[in-house]
Image 1: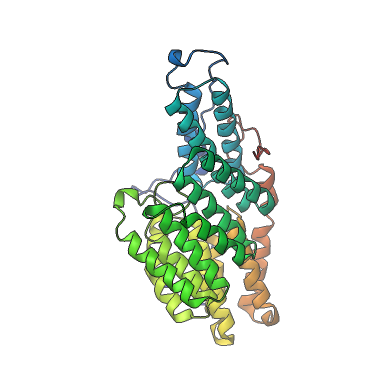
Image 2 (image 1 turned 135 degrees about the horizontal axis):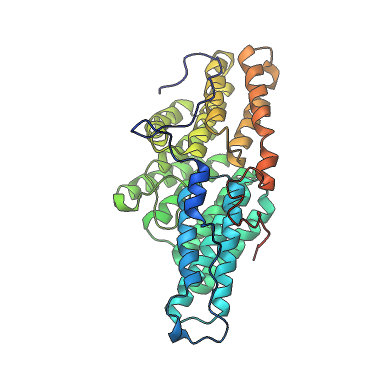
Length: 379
């Protein structure tokens, strides 16, 4: 697997470039596309005839904005995503109060449930697992009422992610198993199998993890490239790279670093090409943890991988990456006399000091675009 050649910390990168050499779209530019400056359109007044407004503008706006936030959520600051989702959910609620035809009511329920899942994801990344759990449970309730099996699966998927990173693999496994009851095939099942594999691995269940990974690998081979999308939360697709990504985590947890490195070698080039910062950082930190646990001879390479991971996520402090970094610092605590270990500890702490600005939304590119703040619309 390609990786840093030494323990020297890499320089922090400048803005990525497009193929033509110009600067790539910034988070601020992305934000301008996702949530228009003019604000949320009004829903029809309560009592307005359904026939008068077949598709309420507020519902169309909510669906379009939710799609934009979902498409950018792995790059945008989580506080901005959470803020935008609050606006989406309020627009949907106003639409529901206005009276809708059956098909539009179902669309509104779907938007309501999906926005709760995305908000749970953003709040989890900001380090509030309790609130994220409530949002995921609320999304599940909405999906159950609407009879939406895939959304039930998605709600359980984000719930499993929250519990996995909260150090509750048993709860994560139960949520993934419950989600699998609602989807017999397709992308959402593949996503849930990845979560199940990680949870089983954290519980020390090798056969269960391997079984889940084998099914997931077989399933993604049947999924059309049109449904791949990008790595990250999705309600309709799964990118095949997410399976070796989850396999890497699972095999590291099962203390099988060589097998983990094989899966990582299959995943990392694609993740790097697609520019998925959270995934790119976590997979490097998983490998770094496995190497650090292997002994002193692996420390320099472990620290180099971890430093790469932090630089990749430098402008985006999220729970999944931060918790892994903390685990690595704990594992290497007794090796601080090693230069690379000390430098890495300083880098991680400097990076983590950036988190409070994200939690308050002051680092959000949504400022000036009618952002209402992170909000607490948990229902």
